[in-house]
Image (cartoon, rainbow, N blue to C red; front, side):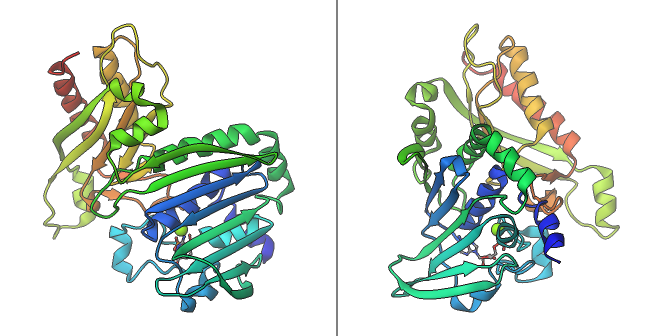
Length: 358
Ligand code: ADP
Ligand code: MG
């Protein structure tokens, strides 16, 4: 049973990046406004995520690491409109199976002390000790990622710096998560300790403006080359979507989409050519919508000779127009009527660029 657990766990946590992502999303789900991610040896030794969120109530201690236990879904209907990142109760359980140790330290509001939970491979609580000093919030600490899977562990060790780079790229996206009415923005810090020396990898204050976050991540010079991105357009709902919703569907046959963020100014002959600084969000949720990204680059290039812009773009989409609960790893967000959306987006971008001062 334990090896089956390991196999299914390996589908949620596939690399360093997804391990970190799950932990950070739990902190965001707990409404943390301060999140610190501490790596040791590029995450090979340990990953620790410290937050000031709601903490875990004592009645939930035993289920934290158990598969399919989540404190986040109140009803089945919630599945179609989940606003939290997590809802399957698989991440902590997977990390238990895929690491040497998982330790959770947590305190809820009003608690005088924090509680330390050491979880077992199967996600059960191996030991519980009370009375450690702890402000409200949760710290999840995992050591030796993939130790139970020697082949994957070797691969991680071999590619440690590259894997760490991917994790940092993802953390950049989370550090840019736009303030919405659901989240207030977070103060975000990422450090790495290697051979006893600590280095701050990034620090942003998402409670300030997006511009402030961009400046603290890449410097004020980068910010000077960006302009606001602010689009509004309608997307016609595809017939297949309406059919799926059934004959009684009285949902409007078109949706208004807003896109907000930042994009590079036109700088003929200059600018960036890579796509490594392009960040997309759907309703504040980081994602990689390949076709949308392609549309941005295509249109931008027709106006600005072969340059790829810096992009931060949050798509505000009515929540019944996208499925976030499609793939088990939640990395694929399906957008209803995506091809219509891409066409409308291209149109809106072309219009915005042709009237933009260069
Ligand atoms: P999910 O996020 O899908 O609910 P997880 O396995 O990621 O499942 O987490 C299991 C449960 O542990 C969560 O439902 C939540 O109750 C609790 N939990 C995990 N991390 C935190 C955190 N940082 N703050 C508060 N609660 C947490
Ligand atoms: Mg989760």
